[in-house]
Length: 281
Image 1 (cartoon, one colour):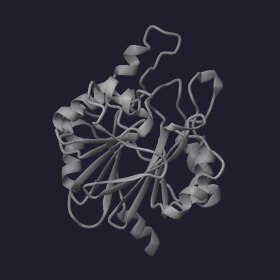
Image 2: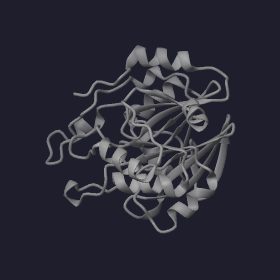
Image 3: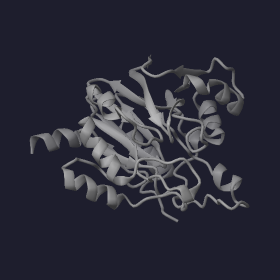
């Protein structure tokens, strides 16, 4: 079992220590496609999966979801989150055992998701249909300091129930693709946003896994370059043993084309200050 770099109270201590108003933002990788974004005292969670629900669900099947990385934290302890996203309804991106405790710990929490998924979300979370903030392609919503815009994702094909989210705050822009493969016009659609950090899956598309596919390491590196992302952080690996990838393959592909990136350990903090330092070197 892979141990997160920081977990439980050590992770919380690191989040608290980094929490300041300085115009920079921080990211922590929480495993799979989950990230915590912190900016000037505000916090947003991208697609968190912080339970054992899928491991239990598939334990006695021919597709066991054997965990590779230990759970980083009980979601109930993240009692400072204002916004959470769900890019689509697969459980590792819309997990009742994660979102239920988050809603209890954060009574004012806002959930942003594709408009097409609002009923499914209401049913899964046992909440009113009005609770999810639904966005269609190109629509935006502002919650606290975060301006969130929905952009298409293809998991495996472009459909209204799968979206990535571009989040703008201060003078920064972060793109979380959700689960996606490449589709025609994708780079052209994303490039005008001026993305500082792209959070992209790298586990690829393998029919023998019997799950919808994603970008592979080479595709993620090239997409990052094509959209002009200042830095890319790969994700969607080292969670389930049947559906993972080696981040070193992404690093090698990015190095070949000169794309800046950061490989994080689960629980590791990344800061936008590294972009400023790199630009002045």
